[in-house]
Image (cartoon, rainbow, N blue to C red):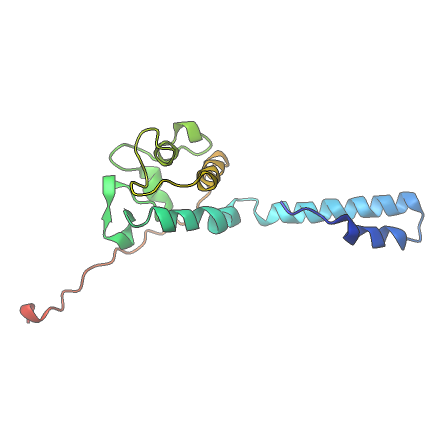
Length: 158
């Protein structure tokens, strides 16, 4: 959540012509309106997912767990919501609201599986994923991505 700089509010208080009480009420209303707007912008968690969670999944998970990679290791697709809801060979990978019961969180913390296998996520990336799962794992990606197919326009098949 964004912090409000008191220096931005101070001029409004000093120029108020209605007295201190009215100015205080006006300022309080302004602050509450601003904070409500900020929360409403991401009420469903979509902004947090798109700005913070999705880049981690794309950078650290998609090479093995996406339609574009051509294979879903362990049967797990992380490039759309139904992929992680269904889960892979080990079952559902995310239990919304319960990071301690989510295989994805166990894997990135290296408690069960070691994912990603080549280089562990840093603590801030893990914290972002935990926060996402704690908040119910909102994910607007409801359409299954198309799987990239290799070209069959080879000279030998002509």
